[in-house]
Length: 221
Image 1 (tube, rainbow, N blue to C red):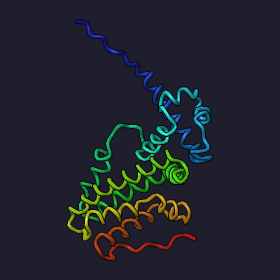
Image 2: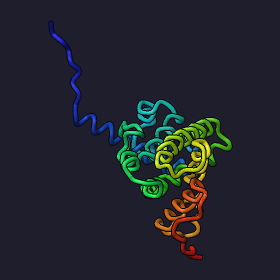
Image 3: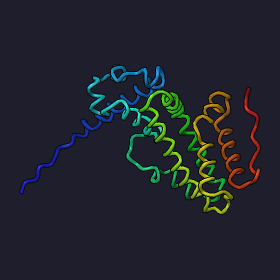
């Protein structure tokens, strides 16, 4: 029996990836300024250099484009790799001791915030007036909460955490909010290393009930 196999052209697949990246890049620019609500998909298409029908063919809707943009911005790529299988998660789990785990997470967090702050802050702003943006923002909050519950469970295995898993997740969830990074690093001018020390020292103190850790130098005026 003859089996018909669909031919997949590597060149065509690469063109499709490039088109998707171009549309996501355009959305990343325009959804920040002038903003999600003020940006029609025709404007995204023009910025990306494609027809608006192409945007619909790739993403289906403006809401899905925003959702995919948030996912790609957070991950740093468009690879279909679940969070628990990402390399940085394995490195955190392999680290020995609470501060070592928090140190690796803080470095990862800083990298993410440097990449995603504009998009996430724009999403938070859009969520106050747009139902689609609000739904995606709410999903992001829920996803972060689940991620911090997983992280709290890993930290608890060190035997150093004095809070319940839920309370520890609350501390982690609040400390890693992008608005902390925006205020301290982007507005107040803290170096990334100082922000990381602030995160590690503050979270360690909350989780262990101590005030240990290195002191943090004063930020620049």
